[in-house]
Amino acid sequence: MYYWIYNVVLHLSFPIIAGLLLVKKRLQRGLGPRLGILGPDCRQLPQPVIWVHAVSLGETTAVVPLLRALKETWPQGTLVVSTITETGKEVVRNQLAGIGRHCYAPLDFPWAVNRYVRELNPFLYVLVESEFWPNLLRRLHRNKVPICLVNGRISSKSFSRYRLVRPFFRQVFDCISLALVQTDRDGQRIRELGAPVERVQVTGNMKFDQMPERFSPESGSTISREALGIESGEILWVAGSTHEHEEEEIIAAYQTILLSHPRLILLLAPRHIERTSQIEQVIRDFGIPSIRRSRISASQGELGHAQGKRIILLDTRGELAGIYRLAVAGFVGGTLVPVGGHNVLEPAHWGKPVLFGPFTDHCQDFAQLLVEQGGGVRVQNGPALADQMKRLLADPEHAEEMGRQAFAAVNRNRGVVHVNLQKIREMMAQCYHSPENQGKSRPIVPPAFQSSVK
Image (cartoon, rainbow, N blue to C red):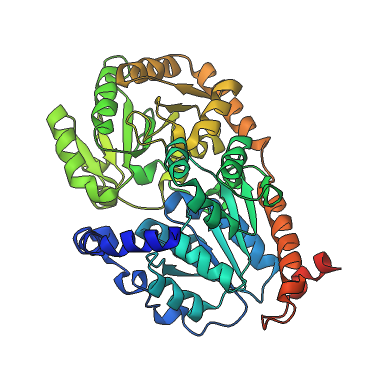
């Protein structure tokens, strides 16, 4: 009955959903796949197929180390990574080139997910963090496809909503073969919502294993100060993944800091780069010079190397994580406004002090860890952010010590990818050799999993 009600509501909402797909530019791409029509790159794929779903930039980046490990362990498998956003697609194309194929995820209409499952015929389905699509999970479960949740989490907001329809989500979570969650709190929540206790395991967060070798100095791919037009003697402050109404507070803080530290340059990286023009207008209202990152190389000798206060507006994708390396400190956005925050570990990976606001529901455990270890500071508003930055700039030794503590906090928690890989191997061996699956025609268990079968 619950699925019937869910699908009635879903289909009644179709005109609204279709309108959003047509109006929002970032959702217009991949319209066919979203409606269940796979593109040519994902049709008639060599079996066996592992289908991984990661909604956007953060989830896709988090699962990259696991996908690389899976491909290395299981080279004969075909990895298909579905996302909802364009930013997630770019992570797949840039970081998983030659490893995984990308497709846009289908909307959760039965007719759309049925076509996807039939076409891909996955050997394993991996969902990242909190992508619980009832019809998709139900169809996979009915096809006896093992379903593994990795980096699982349930935010306070989602938990409150799910509890209102707990009987329905008990059925949804019963489809999941194994739930590998980030924290004890996440484990408790998913069990309370009805997931079988024996299928839930707390393994930690894979973002600790995310130190990107693609940004290492040895790789030559790290963006330089020169590429950003930063001159000798100038200091860079990076504010990343910012949102509307948050930029105003950050820019006001920057304006205050300039009174005592005029050589400070702010790099502002909005979470959604399609807002670039809007943010440029905000910066103009403050009377501060600005330049887009994409235009700096074309302006060498002009604004790209100008002296004095200025804001660099990052309008390119895939560079923020590496740019934190050049900063004296990093502020992580979505935290001065009630969004819930983004990846506070990105600056910490580079040994940089991490600043963030009061709204950290999506990254609460990371934020608390950094505060407790002395590598991060929570500020309540823009003026407090300015005060904290002025303290770091006035005391470089304190800033360096905070950076060391931030890196140490990350380093002590690595190894989650290896644990998750082993848990997936064990789950697959159990699923594909259980009595109920003995008569089902499925791909042969690959040699990489044979050790866990014996």
